[in-house]
Image (cartoon, rainbow, N blue to C red; front, side, top):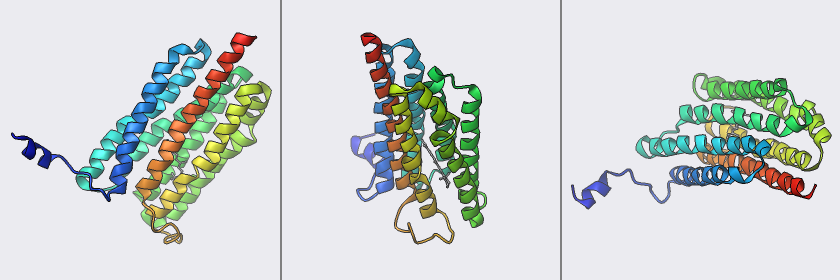
Length: 244
Ligand SMILES: *C/C=C(C)/C=C/C=C(C)/C=C/C1=C(C)CCCC1(C)C
């Protein structure tokens, strides 16, 4: 087989294929972030290593899905809805675990973690049903999903998680605050993608947007950003350990 023939069999990325492009860049960014988190682990005190490990796992799981979704899109030009949600159902609960891990210093209980995971699974399963099995009622599923999302927002901004963060104080409190903003603003990107890609009364508001481009941007901001907040917390907390 000569080189020319080989290249003609590779699925090509057209220069105006923004969805394909964001899948491509997304897979690289997730991979690079994973390498960064994994390789930095050993430089931190033991008590932060699990948090950094989880940051790396989040971006690594996403990277594997992105490589797959990129090919899926390039080959059949359809939204890889199923794998998108498999990715989320693995990574979003891990983000809930991150809240628990950083608040453990203030005595966070596992029940807090399971509560956040429970709401996140409701949020994702109902979103999946709205995008696939019952698209005619996408608005209703989106609404239920949105309520579960708000329950997470409430819990971390005003609930037990918030109280624990205040009790922990210092760099844990400020990391918690930043993560809260990620959930409030960064995660709010996703319903926009959902509304752009499902039928409903909101059709046309986000009409020009592509669901996948919006989701891909959201993932890059949230997964890598979240991890960097944890990384930054580990750096600050380790510094203090030396001073004290
Ligand atoms: C790494 C992936 C993340 C952080 C994914 C987060 C996904 C959401 C916050 C999705 C939320 C949705 C709603 C709030 C309503 C419409 C349906 C969803 C699932 C897109």
